[in-house]
Length: 181
Image 1 (tube, rainbow, N blue to C red):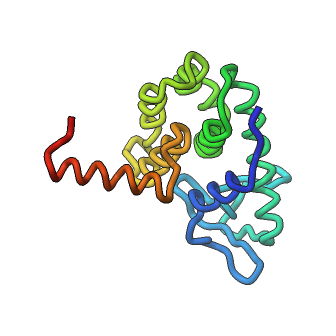
Image 2: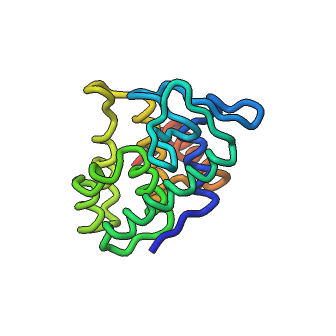
Image 3: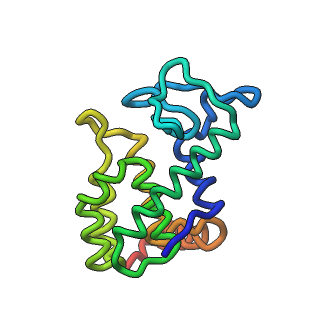
């Protein structure tokens, strides 16, 4: 069973509100998101269940608590829904996905079915992630980017640093030399 880590918290912060919209001097104000007002890191509801409105304000501490509470809720959803054995990267990618699409959408998704059938079917799972890019019926560049980050995390290609650079450089070298097999 996976758990919420600091890496996951920081990843969600970077994905959901990288520019810290609404944050100013310890106070966090609501902002317009694609389908309504949100606060902190994409939250549409406060801890007490109240809907975020145009005038909602909370402290940075409350925003942090709200984020961690939501992540723990969604971690529970993933832990309960996934019957296959997955690693921490795969777990975190799925929690990020649930944070974005919601519990019901995840639980009824083909993505979950494919993960439970074979969590190492990276091609099939990547294809399922990529289906979730629409906002009001139109493809969203934000969601395309988010899904690619989730795919990279899930498949373990979000390794960053030296190894990925080496792989890319070797690929470019071989392409330049036309030695791609």
